[in-house]
Image 1 (cartoon, helix red, strand yellow):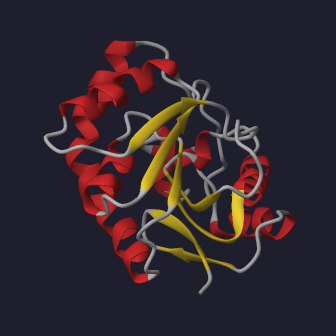
Image 2 (cartoon, rainbow, N blue to C red):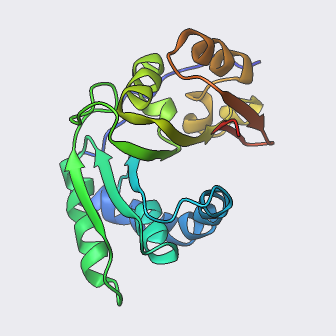
Length: 201
């Protein structure tokens, strides 16, 4: 197993980089959102309060709001420049979206306890300095009956070619972190490129 190497910079710092990222990932995020939306529909979560951790330019949150318009979605990100583009993307939508955005740290979320029905996060975990703190914050802001979907890259030999994969975690590392966390009733499924953490039903 290739050794993990954390990214030096995990937060967007300039608007040009954000806009380039948004353009390059738009279609991919639309496809990725289908898995998230499908699971939420399976759970029959229709009128719920949703938090998207590490929302970046808001693409996952926007797709959620489009596919399940009865949801109220908040996107959280540490980079204000990313939230600027996220708000622009909402304004460009042809249909009204029930979305808002807030600047904040995944390790110290600016929300009260037990207020969200669902927490989602996509490819953010490897950017977090202390993922255990993020897991515990997810637990704190979720209602007792709340659920979560957290996906990220999986570290493998492909990290030789792409630093985001090298900065990611192995299945064992994520499992160990989850066992140390306050999150309960979880399961981890792995694919070739990703680790997917779900509330166990």
